[in-house]
Length: 113
Length: 114
Image 1 (tube, helix red, strand yellow):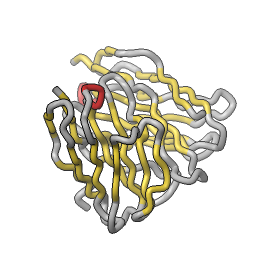
Image 2 (cartoon, rainbow over the protein chains, first blue to last red):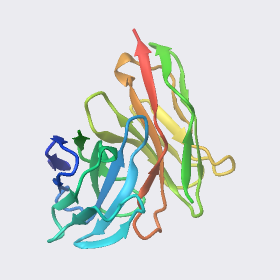
Image 3 (cartoon, one colour):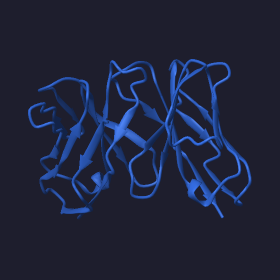
Image 4 (cartoon, rainbow over the protein chains, first blue to last red):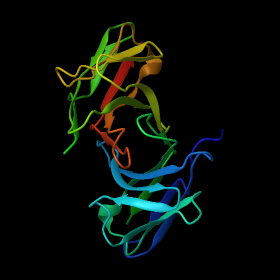
């Protein structure tokens, strides 16, 4: 069990550029989540996949954000036309079922200059 | 909506001191409750959980009891160590909900002095 992995770990980009992050969940987990964490705050839910289906998106996920999980395995989160307010840690998590908690990856820290 | 409130931090204790970190919640259903910990430079890790009222979660000397009557899930440890220095997050999830997403509190930083 290698855990949840995320790439890249750090990303610095200029305002207006597009960025894409990748998450590889634990292999047998069918549920995958994206969260965003800013300094001094707890993680905030962004979106959720069960297998390849995106079943819920938070209001935090503006139309500049898009997430995919094409084959029900890895997932990507893309941010278009980045803004300084997008600077945060983007966390991916996965789980097998409900009520058991989730396993988090190490996160991708995005800095928009 | 669902929410979690944690006591304000940071908290600084001497080694072997008793620790209590308060957590209260508001939920429309019957949540499962969790404590996650984030050590310096590392990702979030599940510390302990409780899935129904009066359950006690425990791990690494930490304990928390699911109190439905006070909607609380306070974290306690009898004797903290320097290695317990970390950020602690309380969270809830609705297991019968469509996605079982977690709602987190703001977190509290614990520093333990030798």
